[in-house]
Length: 394
Image (cartoon, rainbow, N blue to C red; front, side, top):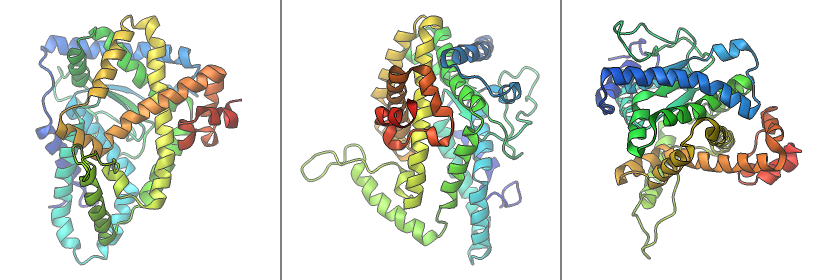
């Protein structure tokens, strides 16, 4: 009843992958020839997008090795799951060690070892099955070190197959989730080739951010590890915060009103509700930098677009309408719980910040944001670009 790692992970990661693979909805129906064409075009667009992004932003990889060490993988939904499990194992290792130390002194250690890893593996798998249908592309900052791929299941396999690891932290990698891209381009009824290049421009911007700014990955990793180090693993304290969270969350779900019938204010997502004060401070800094990265990528994909994506205006309009429209009630609740609504705000807030700064000081002045952690915008400055310009941009 322990995980494949002999109980060292506190989560049965193999069970998480198996659960997600079993639960994840199938992608759109395509012929094998069409799937092969989509994969080939995404690989081609990823290469093409690299030079477009660098020409527009003026950002160049710090070294050829940094650029070539971050591969581009075209995956299906199970492949996205495998890649993210590998990333999770890498980033949460300090928390796992903290939990192990507590479990060693706990009278319930045997019960947890027999049941907890399996239960947590199933829970993680169910979460990944939901998310695997939402993501078009992703730059994995905390991808495990090479070798990043397993041998394909057959010589005719279309998609890359990420390893589960763990091999320790690596330089990062870019994922393009082919079935989700096809699903959205069909849903929006847009030109498929233009949409695929448009998505690649966004994701390639993320890869450029991390290969051109050598300190960025270590900075984010340090913040994440600080956040995990502040995690209270005392079950009683965590249970108390969860009880408080349940009450406030119930009042803030869509359709839950107060006595006057007005919509209750949003209490935040599940992660925010169980944080300590120190974690909220760290998360504020992380939110600012993630808003910068996401907003910058949105600005770049639209800025490059008119020159290389003829239908970019139509794509942006329809894609934004899709974001604003949301989904069904259950989907909206899950998005709020998981913080996905906060992710959408990061795109919007960050894009407003980047456009405002570029308008005031130009792209070269904006690029001072990449000088050091001290030149990153604060959470307040994301909403007040002039304050960042006054502090750094001039």
